[in-house]
Each structure stands twice: as C-alpha cells, then as structure tokens.
Image (cartoon, rainbow, N blue to C red; front, side, top):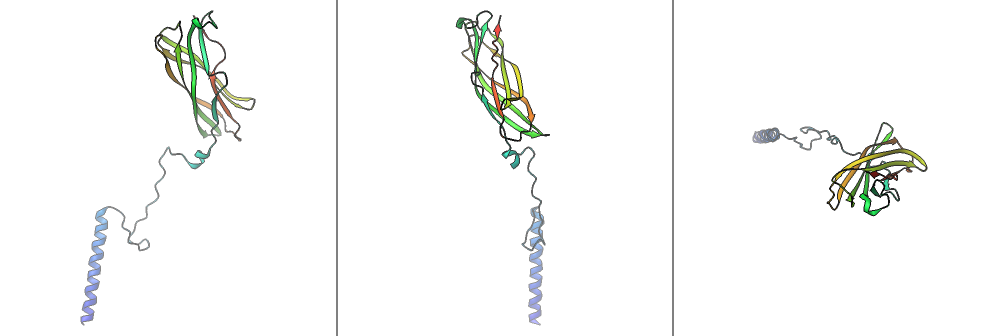
Length: 196
C-alpha cells in the first residue's frame, strides 16, 4: 500500500511540474521546446529575405567597367572668336572619377553611369549657368551599343576658385550581354563649345 501511495505522489508531482512548465511557456509568449520531437514545440518558418536585398546571382552578375575615354577628361570653353587664347577662357572643366551600377531585367542590362568633376572659371567667366557636353558611350569592340550626348548644366561664380559637380545618366540600357566584352566610356564631347 505504501508503494502505491508513493507512486501516486510521484505522478501527482510530475503532473504539477508539467503544468507549471506549460503555464510558464504560455506566459512567456515564445515557443516552448522541450526536446520532445515536436510535441510541445512550435516550428517557425524561416524569415523571408527583406525586399531590396541582393541575391547571389546578382552579386555574380557582370557589370561592365567604366573608364574615362583618353583625351576627353578635360574641356575648355572659350569666348566666341577666342578659341585657343588662354585670356579668352570662360571655364575649364575636368572629369576625375567615374562609376556605374547595373541591373538585369527583361533581357536588358540597365545601368546608371555617373561622373564627378570640377569647373574652374577662366579670365572672362561670369556668374551664372554653364553647359558642359558630356557623352556616355557603350561599345562592344567597334560596335556602338549606346551613345548619348548630354548638355549638363551647373552654376559657377566668376570669382570662385572651383566648383565641383556630379553628372549622372540613369537611363543607359543595352541587351543583356552574353560575354564580358562591353566597355563604358565617359568624356567631354570633342566638339568645341563657344560662348558669346
């Protein structure tokens, strides 16, 4: 009889302890995992990656190199009739850094190409807005896939030592390349610009 009573007390204590553990799990608001192969535990689905994250395929995707085309990183604008005369320079501009970002969608390679530079006013500079001819070209060997001349405007002050600027063409788009043989060039257009 004493043996049976002792067994009943053990079962009762186990039931009380089990109830307290279950109650603690409910009050904590979290999943309770007792290591019972799923009994008493809640499986959570892995969180979906946040939107806007980059996939491994995108990390490995080809993004063509962008460079300054030789001989087009500097540009001088002269007063009309003063071409070549240092005393008739309205401004001199230079491109110093270039970069790009790439995105593949709909069978196209879409790129944003940017360039940073500076403008130094010349002897005949006036306060106001100037226009710089900046060309973006995408080529594959001798084949031109994209070429656009931008008339980029920025403000200068005649007595300012220099003005920095950042130019961006967000609309460069070509068919998705099948080989890594694409080059992007940025530079001032070679056509001289004059100002009255």
